[in-house]
Length: 337
Image (cartoon, rainbow, N blue to C red; front, side, top):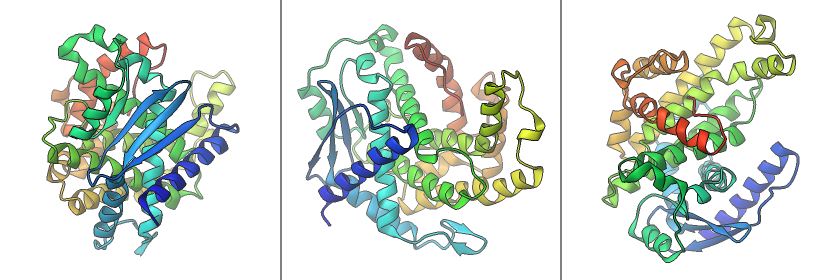
């Protein structure tokens, strides 16, 4: 199957997934162009009232190669001593679906209006050429000045991640833990390859957050997913706090942490090693420090990066004030891990 066919199939799946979650078809027409290039990159641009995505064939081959290498490690996607899946083609497709959801999120969150033009994933010369060819206008992002523009662009990437993660992971169910593991790993594969491509192309990574930061936000979301149904119920009832009886039993929460959350960090480390992305492996740090930082940030107890241990947590906390300003400007809420 050609890369173009696989990308078109993944786009169809992404659009179906959005329609199932939202219970209505995706509002925009999405036009996909596939360019024959071994590098890993993608560009999202406004297309009239729709969305134009240009994606390299290297995205497909890069993900396929990463999953092929990662499955050589016996520690990947293991639950109770057994591998959840070893289907390279399937994992490649799920990763492609996440990438497409991420690009669609840039449009859904009105990022093109904010930046005045298109947005790229991985800073290769080809993506810079495509964006410079397109009409770029002044946008609200310019109000932050040159010094803060790159930080603002990193905030937009985290916003798009957050939106796409919510779509892909969906809600919590104690019967879908293996699905969460698979989808979380698929997301992390994309994040790892974007950082590796940025480094290989000589990019200073100024417009993309560290992969460790993106993974920190992802696993922070995953770590609190079990509480979301109770939070929604409290909102529906007009309660200021979640009721204890609406939360899963303690034993279920402990099993979820043991079966889903902690092994997901192992999956991240395996993917970083398989991609030979040494910077990602280093930035992830020690799992105990990583999860301690998630607890600190989610409790609102980190006033500065000096109080945190891992690179991803430090970058996220550093970006939070600027992100809050961006979201306020756009009429939205701020980021949370």
